[in-house]
Length: 118
Image 1 (tube, rainbow, N blue to C red):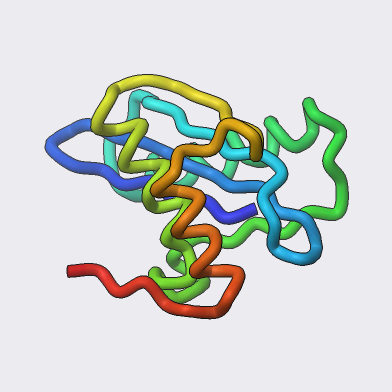
Image 2: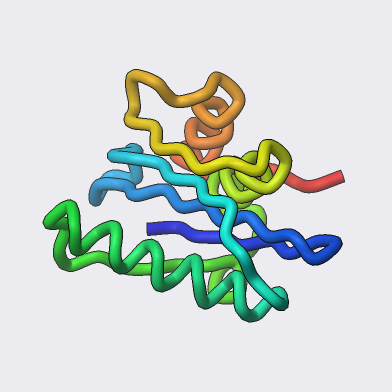
């Protein structure tokens, strides 16, 4: 599961994307938590991902955050977290309902094409 948790102007968002062993999405999550620092929101993202996977009976998972992988390889989770932060809301999407822009980012990641930030 790829996770990210940006912290900006005393607000935080967290995002996660659970993938199968081929890299295809199983589910995506976004949450607008209360956090006190960038480290706090990264820890909350990890905790939320683990709790969500356990509650939904997903086992043998690997958690990756942008502190462990290149940011360009974690763009989908980054986008989800920023959406939660921008809209100040929680959400859950499965593949038939994934946002078009997120779907494009996932496709680039599956092809191994890096998405470089501006």
